[in-house]
Length: 258
Image 1: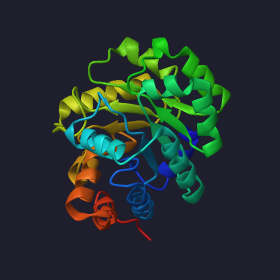
Image 2: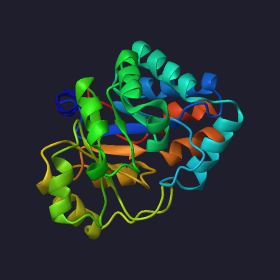
Image 3: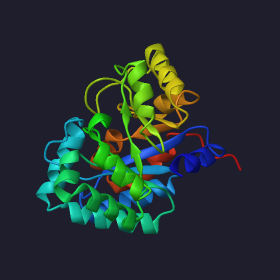
């Protein structure tokens, strides 16, 4: 269902935008304002990260946001309540992004049941390999949720094919090795990697890690289906406040033709 939704949106836009927030950073009130600004700016889908003490896939900017959110009193339940609020309020799909420890401690089936009740579309769990995901995959399927798995430039063609069998909704392609927020080279090498990803799956391809401006999004046009903007929006909030989010997102693509 998520994949079909994104394909429909692609008839309106050549490349879609998926944004990312850390829930509760700088506060839940500001998180809600950021989501509202992103939706008004035309974002098609959004990741909602549950803050975690050891977010191993994240660089310093998102790590800092995780720590600040936890210090301010964020909890898993508060994040699920926030996810439910935005899913009801805004007409775009929302994915939870979380590390597996949180699902394991909460109870995988209980967590996915709560996600479904909240109206969320699926989840990205970057530290869960598909070989160890049987319980998670069964629970996600039971609650009609999309499990989104990750490809990297070092993923072999054989493993890409294996991962494409279990991911649903979209495939998240990280642009390079390393953590979020570092510089990415938008080059022929990245083009070749995305060509391999495209050959492995018919699902929409989302490219993240290092996408920060209009030039990066333009590079991905025709190569990926979604550009994922994560770290850069947190930098915008820190430097310009929530008021800077909408113009930043609007500047990533040309205006819609009337």
